[in-house]
Length: 241
Image (cartoon, rainbow, N blue to C red; front, top):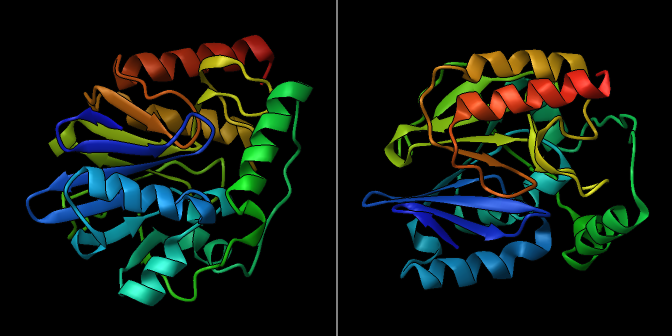
């Protein structure tokens, strides 16, 4: 799905992967689920591109529904995979956490779990190697993505700001569709290690000026980053988080 010039999404509102397309090549933001590999190939073909054009994958964090096909790209195509140093062990499968699920609705949760199973979410291959990054790094990749540390969802959760496409990719720092309840609109994401810390970290996005806010789960948001942050803060306050 083309969102804007140079900005594409594969997957859907349940699990999304983003592509930044520039004359220098493609940067992939997050790698979704392992079974979204075919979606990646189809999306590249629709853009008139191929795997040969992919220069790197940047992970917003190291959870299994974000690293899906990353190791396949790294192993088979030599594509480097970047992740914050605090989530490197998680991306390599060396550690994990099991935060509380919180509120859920059976229908929405079943749709999420069924989609994950159907897209081989239970067969995720951890990364054998990663390129660690830190807050403030500007990566030598198409679009010159800048790393913004947003600890909370995980210790190494980050946003990736790409001014070239007027977008900030936020992973699970927030969601616009809660996968366990089906609730729409900007709000805190489930499965978060430190919910209060995650909401507090969002203040680091204020003033970026990006129109697009692109989460790992949910509808792409194009009403500006400041408004998205305000809505998440309101939702957190209402829920008592």
